[in-house]
Image 1 (cartoon, one colour):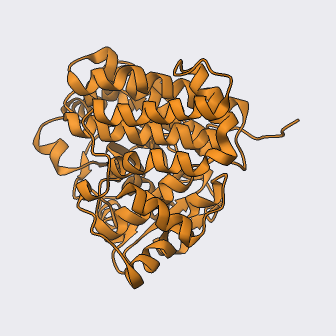
Image 2: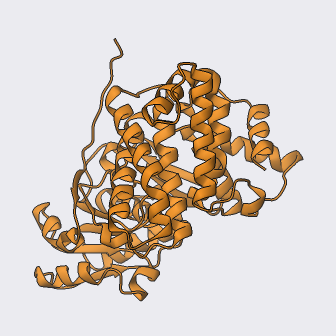
Length: 387
């Protein structure tokens, strides 16, 4: 018997145009004056108009918007958003955007609800009380931050990603509206889709808290991504494909929130912090190499997944696992993503620089869930194979 605990505190609402109901949802949660956290692109391109109209129609006396969120959010951004929320006496948050916006909103909510310095709460399970009401509306299908317990915020001083993890960080409600992602460009569609696939495949082999429930979510998420991501990438107006990838992203996030991720995310976090690469694309490059690194310890799980997904009929787990890894590599090609770090603009590292980068990987919290322990030599080997 394998004892486990599974939880998913976020209520998920899926459907076309549900984003417009955000204010009604906030009011049901007890909020009266939400801070809308989003980014400038969504504002300038009028992509959140229905949400803002819903606020006004619902009786919100003042629509307060913070949109100065960078592509890779940092501590300074969170502190500015918190000050803005206090200045306008906001008591709740509506987050509309991708992973950076969601993580900014979660971290801002820590400060809004608990006060003090954001850095006091970094790490896992350092938040012991419920936060202010928060509604999350994703505009990408990849990060899954709308249901996860984690926020990643960059510390520009130390050039590293800080992790904040607590069940209280999960938004109260996630509104999954496929109309919100139809304008996502092909490259970002592909990149965020591979981020979600990485969540699913790493959650499957996480060693500490995985369960049959999270496994089922991860495998079905992977199936939806393999089947629908190419369609969504080629035709952004394909609402059915958009819908399926959006649901898949949320399912994968619920899976990894219960099971953890692993070495691929640790590598991507360290690389992104050092070289400002896109998280989803960086995950995509490392994913086949991370899977091969874990193969000795995870072949039975990979083999089972390969057979469930229809990539192999072989009962030989090594053979079936290789078919799954090949399917990942072929998906990268099909959706037009690069397959090596050089194509991402990552320079060749050696000596002290490589040692310092390895330390970031080893220290990343994601790696603690990996099924195989990694040494500096192992990490350098993966880096060189991925280069």
